[in-house]
Length: 201
Image (cartoon, rainbow, N blue to C red):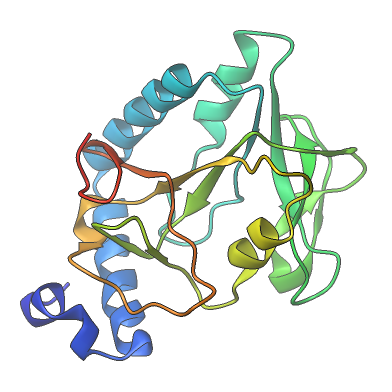
């Protein structure tokens, strides 16, 4: 990421910022040490929050692949569940369906694999991929708004804990925000867990 964008992200359009952060994420993801460290930090996050059902994501280019970490987490307690998002129709909220490493997959919207025949479940913790994130817990995604819509429409009064997954290279001081944007509860990177509005652990 260029120094000018890191220092003054609000002076750049979302498209420019997204392009720069995607490049920074690809570079970080190419470092095996960063990926290994992020996997370890994610395991610590799961131990800290002790969820029953974790919703996560099928990794796209440059995104951290959490499947191995979640597969191991599942083996430690038979009552645990992991789930991947299913998009019923473009622009709709996400539904989460149970996943294991043996789950049959199909190609869904945006050509992203999703569980084929497993039941819908309700995660109590969501792992959310980030293109970038800021000190207040706001994330920059791909611009589809799926996670914001999903959380806004979440059934019941109790929403899941939201944990962003990102690399330190994709952290900026402040991101452009829309009225519908919702901050994450925390963000985990290869350096550790950033909780709260000041980014402290």
